[in-house]
Image 1: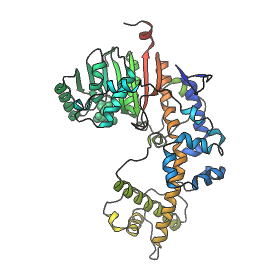
Image 2: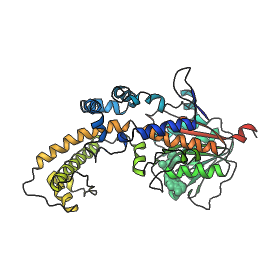
Image 3: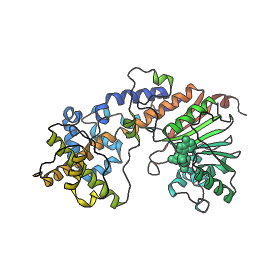
Image 4: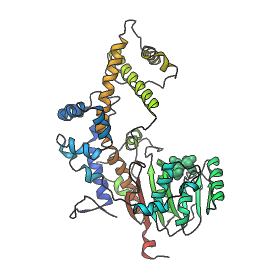
Length: 420
Ligand SMILES: C[S@@+](CC[C@H](N)C(=O)[O-])C[C@H]1O[C@@H](n2cnc3c(N)ncnc32)[C@H](O)[C@@H]1O
């Protein structure tokens, strides 16, 4: 596998493993910026080592924060004045665009009249994913296919019937009904893809759009073991894994000295996105976070211990009862005695200040989302190479359509060398 790293005509060519190594070493080097969660850590170590960076983010307006959160390359450029090792950020996260021109994507997308039950974004994502794979040369197996939206989109591009695997019987029933209604050559089987008894037919093109964590890793492992001629996967929810500490799949990465060993909760960072909930829901979430941060300051003060204490989820009624009631409830849950003269207004104000700080520290932390995601996915590419595949890794659509826009597309080398 060769990936072009860097934009310029003289940019050197890097192997998948070199890309992975570079990310691994860079993430290890910058651990202090992304591992501590700002919600729990008011004074991250980096704010002491990089006071100019801390001052710069503290001085950002809310609208700057909003803009920069969606523009990590610009933020990296601005902050590289204080942290020179952020200079190569854009190159570090660069991957090629795998989708063809807009017209070809539009052609591959199901028209709205055939997109029953299919949310608008799913229709467009499925179209962009399918267009990026064309031409297909084998019948396809759609892994964790839900109602088979991708299957039905791929059907006209596919030389044979499409088989879907999905374990939710309602989705299986609805998906098969939709396929019948529109005359698509798609059939969905009720199948637990994690079952050890599952035997994969060896001649199918395995596809998976947004199968979570261990589900897509199962297709990588089982699909390559079965020697499937092609595997095309857009992964998501990397942190949904059976193991607490994440281990890379490839032998090369697993044997690397100085290996990053992220926990499940570290990996969650890779898929943290700005919540695009309705304004009313966002306002409520923001209030809850202010209350929780206010209570966090208060509990540290009362206990005389500068340590975060997790508080369980609260009953909805508390939202109508106000901050003092929330604090009394949380204190009782954590067995803390609340003095009668507690100045709740002051702690509420403290919560608002912490919230502004958390937002700015999160901005710095969010710079590391894509590198962490790419660290996981470049290892998948190395793994597939080790299993005898030639791999492309890139984006199948713009981030605006889905932030989970990476596509790993692998063709078994013997298939390339001796086409059927
Ligand atoms: C995020 S959805 C993606 C659905 C579909 N690929 C799409 O893009 O519309 C993940 C799907 O995996 C299914 N799923 C979860 N665990 C599964 C398992 N063990 N075996 C089969 N399907 C599973 C869920 O029911 C769900 O439909």
